[in-house]
Length: 63
Image 1: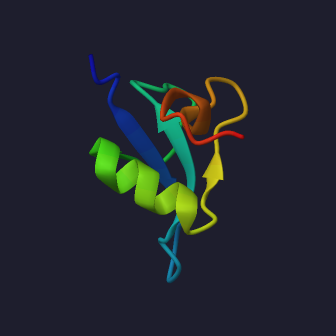
Image 2 (image 1 turned 90 degrees about the horizontal axis):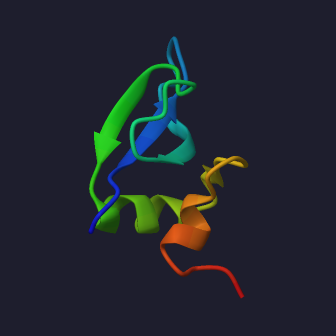
């Protein structure tokens, strides 16, 4: 089952994603839900993975 993914975005003139989270992360500020495909794409584009639930591990992206 897809756990769902959320991104945290910056504020101001630079609202780019800076961290990917697994599921409903209450710690994620300025959060937006994204698909599994989008989460995987963002992680390959050097957006950080949340250090607590490790979406990169959930997606099987770790070596």
